[in-house]
Amino acid sequence: MDGDDLKRVAYYPGCALEGTGHAYNRSTKEVGKALGLDLVELENWNCCGAMEVKNVDPQVQTYLSARNLAIAEDMGFDKVMAPCNGCYHNLKKAEYDLAHNPHAAEVNDRISKKAGHATYQPGGVETIHALDWIKRAVGEDVLREKARGKLKGLKIANYYGCMYTRPRHIFPEKDKGPGSESTLKPHFMDDILAAAGAENVDFPLKTACCGGAHSLSDSDISTKLVLNILQTAEACGAEVIATECPTCHTGLEMHQVRAEKVLGRKTNVKILYFTQLLGMALGLSASKVGVQENLSDPSDLLRAKGLG
Amino acid sequence: MPIHEKSLIRPENLVTHDQLVIDGVDVSGHWSTFITSRTITDYNEALQDEIAALPGGEYIHRCWQCGSCTNACTVNAIEPDFNPRYWIYLIRQGLEEELLRDKDILWQCVSCNKCTYACPRDVVPEGVMKATAHWLELKGHTPKSPSTHFDEGFTESILATGKIEEGRVLRTFFKRTGQPLNQPWLVALVTGLVRRFPIFYLARMGFSAVFRPRTRGWSRTGAAIQDYVNERQAEQRAALGLDVKGGH
Image (cartoon, helix red, strand yellow):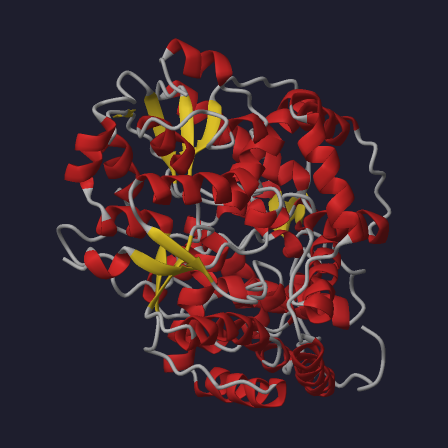
């Protein structure tokens, strides 16, 4: 078990968690506190480039992540935790590209030198997701003990989105058999919430795309994709869709409103970050995990379930 | 049943006669439909190399047309004309005119990476889609897509400050694409948020409008990245036979 060296990790919140994903940032930190885990924010981090910079130049995107990894290493960490799928994916991809693509490594070196900092060498820092962090640092047994079935009776569809599992080659630790995460049927969020007592519904669209990259630039397609996810979750009997990415979360919330306003299709499923659900299972109040910032107001449901 | 899979042929290439006699034989009825013959003379033999010169297109030559990309594609499921396998085929054959028929939808790839996951040849079809959409714009076949406007505004923000502030990226995007900010669903979204938690949101909006988030000491880094981007874009324009200095 690597639980102990995950008790204190570098933390890369990223831009979204300082904006629309504020509630994810807040609930992640609160959950960490409640579980006795220490997050040390990367000093003076920069944006990872999200889904956009790679379309201007992929090597620049690699550099942006490499700079953040260099900071983590400089601060003496060998693990950095990124709760946002976009950040997580980009740090992972940079790690892969620096090790496998000489051109990416050369550009990283060149820009790092000009910018005046040490060039990050692959292998120095392992990037983990908030799901890895909780599952590996705490584990289901402890969660079960602490949550005492608090999410009992809550029907959840776990939604992981695209960037947590695709493309698989940038996640060498996944698909390694029992105990490891699967890129086809991810289950870490299911495991964590089940340990807190939730009833996970059998949801076929765990890794479907919400159209997040074109949430604004091609809203009609995004609305269709999101509506499909929301309606499928409802058809599977879910009361809540649990998310682990600020872009997915905002996309689902935003296009839930848009589907109602533009297509006249109303859905009632609530959208919550898994850290919000876990936080409430650990006894934190709804306001502490930022539920009031969610667009799909879940307060009636939470009250009915005795949460928050 | 003379023509199987008629649905795969474009209507304008099918000719149907009510009454038809050929060499004295009456072929009216089932045998009266023909496909007009086409002779293709305008191959662009450089097409694959041009796409490969743009970021994301590097591995297009590996494709062996299995169709896993289209089969896995998120957009294809809602928009059947969005067909990465077919576009890769056209590019590799140099069939530029055929490719241009789909120029207005090609930018719609949502980068879900399902194709890249499914591809047995590591073509990175997602990258090829981006490279092709970029090619269409560079060659002047299409105006900049909303997606390109978004990418550019986003990247400019990072080059300037090291970070993005969502409100600013959003305003830049709406301005550049000429969209109004008062669309009913956007208004419903913002009022929904503000009504539930007014002080927090108003304070945050005010704060981020005044204090732009930034990475300290970024100017040197931003300049180093900009130098590299300028150099790469000049190389790309040269590979496409375009004036190196011309604006995108």
